[in-house]
Image (cartoon, rainbow, N blue to C red):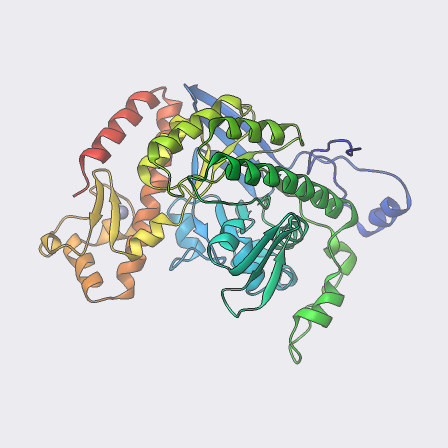
Amino acid sequence: MREPERIPGEVSTRKLSGLEQQLARSLPIVVSTPPDFSFRGSHEQGAARRGELVTPHGAVETPAFMPVATQGTIKGLSMDEVAGAGGRMVLSNAYHLYLRPGDMMVRALGGLHAFARWDGPMLTDSGGFQVFSLAKLRTVSEGGVVFRSHLDGSMHEYSPEAVMRIERNLGADVIMQLDELIAGQSALAASRGAMERSLRWLERCRAEFDRIERDGRAPLGLTMTDAVLPAGLPSLVPADPDAERVAPPQALFPIVQGGTHAELRRASVAGILGGGNWRGIAIGGLSVGESKADMYAMLEVCEAVIPRSLPRYLMGVGFPDDLVEGVRRGIDLFDCVAPTRMGRDGTAFTPDGKVQIRKGSHRTDRRPLVEGCGCPCCTRYDRAYVRHLFVAEEMLGLRLLALHNLTFLLDTMRDARAALRGGSFDGWSDSWLARYRAGGR
Ligand SMILES: [Zn+2]
């Protein structure tokens, strides 16, 4: 029989003093604290809505784009620059941090917020996508995924339980379940198998998430001494190991799977909703090779069956037009490496489509990348200089374009929120998309 449903973060003993913790261990008491997570939607226009997601590290106005700090850093930028560009919630990756420097090491160094010097809301992806795309020699079974590290060839097992322990150690505000990924346009039977396995893994994630909430995290001192710290390094054993075992308040998000099959997407949502009281829900397995029309159709299928009280997070989708199309279909959160990856390639986002800055036509172009953009690239430099930086392979060029692209996506979401607040979102998004698609120089 399943345990009674419990909302993570609503009842917690994490704020107790040492004496109270001793009492709590000896007496069957629980102490209620205010919810650490909430979501409130407002200003709806069709499926689109403005909203506010509250986490233990602050609130995020939605719809929002989350910059991706894969290894605990947004490539080439400091967290101060990301905040300056308007980033309010960042995403990091459990797979990469588990392999290097290790989730226990991050925890011993104060948790990912302190380690990366990011005080705002943070989400970690489970790393399922990376296991399926980066790792070598992986074997998938009901138990989980056994894989060889892409870094040093060492063998690892990624089970739903292990992933929860890793993400609990890292300590992000929102953590993702482990799910099974398959190719974007897989046939019905394969898609169904992966979707159903993802639901079974979600149940195991939830059970382990709750167990850690109840029993605490693995002792750090022993593990750090015995297994993680190479000989000769100063100790990282915490002063108060008992207090350190308490997991920070976190929310576990399930992931809707089902490929491009509407009936599987609906079944996935139904299975998720029947399996717990969630604080949010993610839509995964899109933008992996299917057509844009198929992706948008799946968003509409999910939108119709996900309760509007839950924030919806569309995973790994972040080209400018996909953001606007996603907001139109009820998405609240996005993430993608596109702004920095495209920036490194010399591609800049503009309201008139993408611009390749290396083109010879920019050689004498005195205009900024985007007139009116407030980013450090556009306020200070012209296209001719930025092109020169790329042709000369100067590091500053990559950084400036990454900052511009990030600012562009964050500004686009800010404008979408303003249009929603003002009741003009439909017209705003129509003309935004028409201009973006007419460009593409
Ligand atoms: Zn700019």
